[in-house]
Amino acid sequence: MADNSSPVSGLAERYATALFELAEDDKALAALETDVGRFATMHDESDDLQSFIRSPIYSAEEQLRGITAVLEKAEVTGTVGNFFKVVAGNRRLFAVPEIITAFRRLMAEKRGETTAQVTSAEPLTDDQIASLKAALKESLGKDVALDIRVDPALIGGLIVKVGSRMIDSSLRTKLSSLKLAMKEVG
Image (cartoon, rainbow, N blue to C red):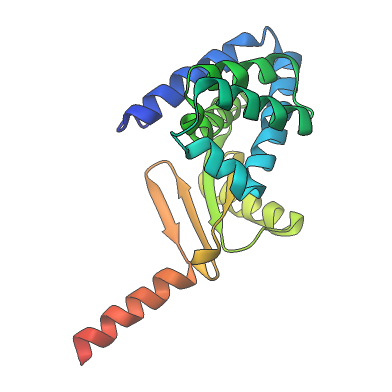
């Protein structure tokens, strides 16, 4: 179920659904997912791209030129490339991270998976990802797709969100709790 608590999440859900529905069969969906993944990786690894996407100061034409250059570098063409160009032309680039998350959730639902949002202090290794998926599958009783983000401010540990449940084992949270406990003692 989509979290429509903000206008951006509703907008992102509509755009993601439109992209999902552009595919006519499972083979086309797999190709879309690959291209969205390539773009998402580039987004996640580039602070400049994230700033560009969030910035309201660029005109629609500037956003379209910028996103076209990024898509060419990521070798994202066809349906996904055209989709992101439409998003830019409509001045909706700020919603791209949420669109990607919503699209991944739709893909996971199609495969009978549930999606877990995972935030880690450092990029996870393939072994760590496999272990996390296995632990979540055992706990939830179904396959789990991971939406992984990196936030160095966590210092260490993970934050895992599945639906309305959240497990926060980050060092930042533990240190904040310890700091609060020390204030209460002193």
